[in-house]
Amino acid sequence: MEKIKKLAKNKQLLIGSLIIVFMVILALFAPYLTPYSVWKQDYGSILQEPDSSHIFGTDQYGRDTFTRVIYGTRVSILAALGAASLAGVIGVLLGLLGGYLGGYVDRLIQALTDISWSFPSLLMALTLVVIMEPGTFTIMIAIALGYWPQYAQVIRSEVLSVREDEFILAARAIGASDIRIIFKHILPNVIPPVVVLISLTMGYAIIVEASLSFLGLGIQPPMSSWGTLLSDARDFLYRAPWLSIYPGIAIAVTVLGFNLLGDGLRDILDPYQTRL
Image (cartoon, rainbow, N blue to C red; front, side, top):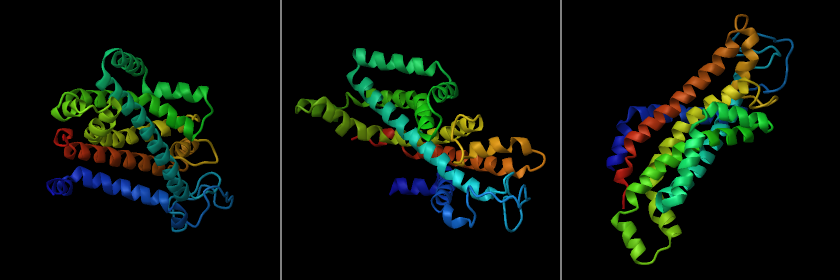
């Protein structure tokens, strides 16, 4: 009950949640929010300014910009969610193993973490996308490989702080296996920081996905993402500024929403209050 009151009073969490819920609704109900096709071209409406029929205007092929922006919401959020989830699975697993087992396992994982951190995340993503075929799955892998060390380090520190607690010692005393102790007793106590990290990582992932798509190394046509919309708008910055304004606003608002949500969750989900 106390945490529910804290949730209601946390303005960052409230605003961030409202933004994300709104963007998710746009993504889920995109086909019902616009009468236009995301791909169909209308050469009679090329570069039409925003009006009652096209509230965000049209692009160089006569396609409705509002339609392409809300369909881009689907692609960008899906790619970000997949990347954050994959990074979380890799990082949490390695953090649990390194923190609990220690020794050479921990040293090996720390070495992998240091190597990964020596390369900028965007550069690593660019390298992987160039090697592999561009696409949504490739972007997820590229972003995950750049951000899993954050999860591993946070989870490792949490595991180190709980592995000698009384409930862990009691589990060992009754003969519980290491696997059971890790996943039954330790994992539930390190979930809160993971939730916060996923929220923050999704904001970063949206920026990385948009950057790669802007460079032509991410989401490929005919799929629509915010990065590809910005890339297509480069040649029309002065003639049709709405082509870049609305996707840019969508990116900024969504990233802000995830950051506010993550900050709010971090204030509420104090991992030290969840110890058994």
